[in-house]
Length: 152
Image 1: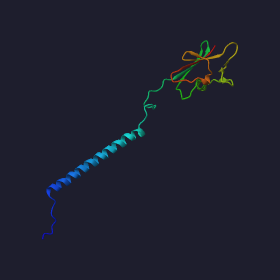
Image 2: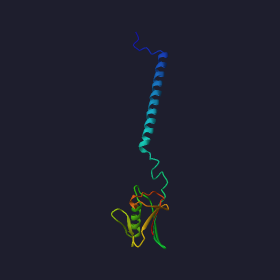
Image 3: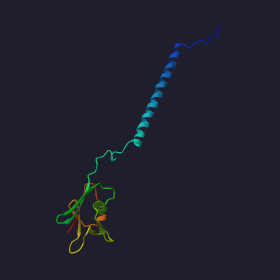
Image 4: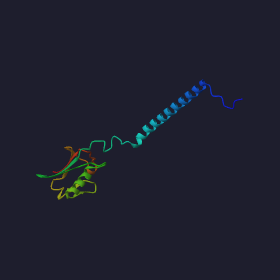
């Protein structure tokens, strides 16, 4: 009797390699699909939103003009922050320009620099050339607005 093992018939070997090949291709396909799924899910974690300051155009500056009457005018230009009002823009302009802004307890504008209300004149506010009758602290401004305080 021969002690060697009988070899598998050729049909069985072919079947074995076909099964190994199919399983290998299926495993590679599953790995590829899972990797692709992971990639698309991770895009939300690592990508920048479209509204980021880097991706978007810069906002147009807002202009604040103080008109004391006659030829005395000063203008300031800058960016608008969230929640900024006409009064906060005026106060930022005052800080940059070295003049004072005074309001009463209700928030009405009393004086800008040395020019205060009285003698039939008062400070009026215009946003984009339209007169605004609300308090400056209640008027929200947006990028590109033109805010004018006129002593009339």
